[in-house]
Length: 387
Image (cartoon, rainbow, N blue to C red):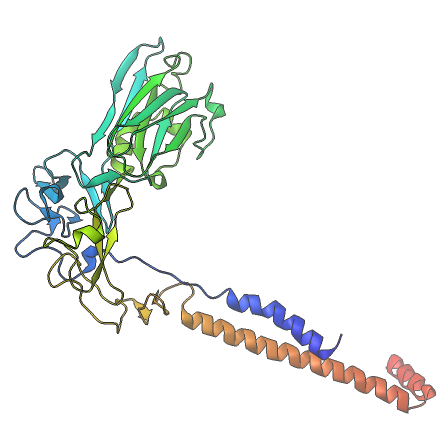
């Protein structure tokens, strides 16, 4: 093998190792990260939840953009709990384009003779509100003798169903929701109201020992992983209500950006831009322009400059299209990448040098053989052997 070939293959073996030390990360900016979160003299927290404008705490207090963005902070709980306006939908989190609410779960339970011992339905109505069910949610049905329908008549005319069957606990597959003890189906964007109807094919006769109840709920599938234990867990309904949120899309008004900006109450302020809602129901949201931060709905709008900076614990140029911001304790920060490249290059130089001198030594040895008589080399090798 020639020296050039040896170096080429050595480089190919080391180069992927150097690249493996590089990585990148990104994070989204929330409207709760600005220095101004609420309108003047308005409360910013209800219990553990930060409530940013265009939402506002209090009913008809003027702290929100409209009455449906009012957050009712119920202080009879400890800590207080936030609810959407005057309704009974508990808010778990408020994001730039989503609201997470507490779940509702339909359930039907049976005794060993097939008699119903408990039944309740799940029904949520978002008609006339600025909210719609996100298509992130999945309709999930749990049980070994279940069929369920989900129907929506507002926003999107929609009907779908799911059937979940099995004859023994051994049939169940952990983490699988393909129809054996658990099934899931998608919903469309823009759904405003749903009602789930849960039924049984054989009233759970012969399976109550490991599956006395069936359940149906709409929720974020990333927060639920099926387990066979769920079928016998008497606390499953309450656990799902508390731990599997329903994700809602939200938007301001019913007009898209091009129409809304014609009116005086257009809410996207300085250094921000308008985003049309993608639910098909109209409405819009606002976001800070590149290089700016804050709450785009509040005076004076988004602030800052194009000289971006990173928050504490991060380094970089802070720009979206540049290096961005990298955590100082990141597994693969730039320093480690540079160190990896340096060590890789050093190893490459050392290995290339070894290969080069090995080849030169071989060439020198062969040259000497050609110059000196063969009898001399036989004598040298014999002397070496005797030593």
